[in-house]
Length: 341
Image (cartoon, rainbow, N blue to C red; front, side, top):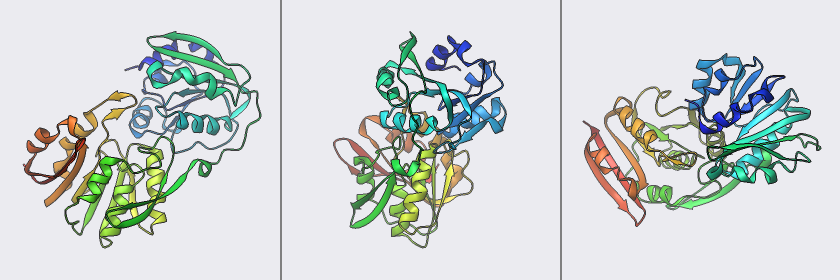
């Protein structure tokens, strides 16, 4: 299904009919089937849309990565406005190194997603920004790349911070667009400070973000095998670097839910997302809980922290024989679950 930003983009489809174009983080895969130009490519930082896009068009036209290779080969680019404006700045800095001189730069998105900041975001790259369309609470802005381009280095956008939690100090790498960028969010702190004893064996940090939980359990249970998974290439890049900073060997896997996860675990830990872009979305956790039984060994546990208003207790009790609240605050509930039904 076409997203609202893609519908707005198609109203100006004529702009993309000639030359080679790169679409960055489209909200849907269908847009690649709608555009009548064989030189349309996709750069994806989210594995779900990447997989869907590969299924719709040639796999070699799509890249899943934290950053795009910096070669000036494209005549134009479409950047779908991300939730984080700093991530938008990083994407534009990256893609500017991939464009020919005077290439067309389009920025599209929803009003509530921050698209109105497009003129300011595009100012470092173009002398003039034009709003060329608006409808369905979305807008499309355009400019020509006519300012000098600075060579892009992803490391310049990375931040390294030291976290101190539950008597453990360790380092974490983060990037714009990664959950709780540059800090320890309250929900994850509640989880780490109230953990039940960590079992030996195979452990999963699901929706790992920058790898905070995975690094913590890896340092606490160094004889265990830690797997980290996330849908975000930015998160996976940071999780791998976080593990490296702490001398840990982990397995980092891109996955939409548990679809790419193989084998079973002795314990799974998660602070699952409940947003897709700016929209509240419970489907990620619901899908995760629907798949979890086939990934737990006998007697294995799930530790999950969530905002109290999400009311996951009923869903957990419907799937587990034992659900124990480990901690509660005014905003978060921490659940320890054992034995799938």
